[in-house]
Image (cartoon, rainbow, N blue to C red; front, top):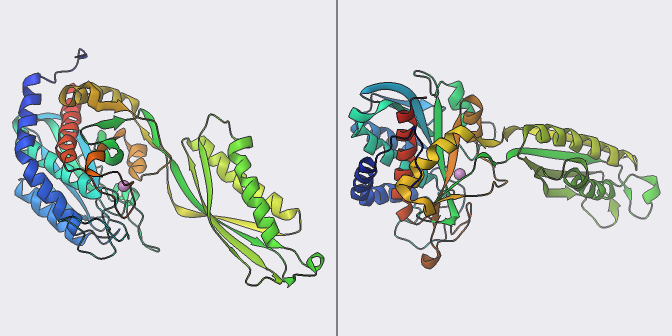
Length: 413
Ligand code: NI
């Protein structure tokens, strides 16, 4: 097994962690099922926060701060030896999706489901908290646990999520110097983790375009301005941002997901409204594409005499970009505890995560936790009614996260 010179991750400790995690497995499953049965929407994670704070209190944490960015919980575990502060982030919210799984731990909250695996993320973080609380004597530094609400986005008119947690001091007192998070991956088999160095997830921006024309009888089109024809041309022309205007080696997704206009077959509409999302893997490409949407929509609309007004939602996510040094440093620890074959390099994807805000503030790395199990029929994608996680992944998550944290503290950066 390849070990770098600075790695002090001894085989004895890996065995000890593996045994401790194996002994915790049934309680991890019970914790995950409890969260899964009681999902709460973004900014409504009241019970979830209570369960977390109670558990951390029982584990003897030095501080447990609740009410951070509404229902967020920030807790600190001080090691016996001096050292840096490393943080683990777990998101708490569920989605407005009706569960179709027929399982003993089916959601009891009708129309709400942990369909993005945040139940697993919280369970793993609490498992790591339990394990490390028993290993204080050998901890060279402190570990901060950040339970974050509203990762999926707060309700209209409300504020929360990673950005607000940072504003409310989640990374301060004491200051965090590095941060880890994981996310469930149903397309990766349980037992494995996936890592990406650099851009892992995309920036995400939501926009709306209002195309204004002039209403007239459908049989006298020359006397009006047809916003539907203009809108159709805008939809096509916007695809030239990715295909003609941005360097083709840079990923760009621009999707118009909604379009509405007009109300009768024989009337030319007065306006069309559409909504879309923009995804990129680079801040420079993101800025360029945002400018191009306005330029193209305005230019194409102007040609038949229509006008286009583009608006960008203030709710957006930067690129989730993993700190290369953190990932490279964690790799030997992950391979040592999970085995080389279970630590796989995976390509980046165009989904988005507000963990990106933490990564803008401090070096951070997120990795994928495989939760798929084709033999058991656990293959449904994130954010779908049949999404599930193979529960053998819980122990793997605790092992991988613990290894990353201990290895970081041992290196004394
Ligand atoms: Ni998620």
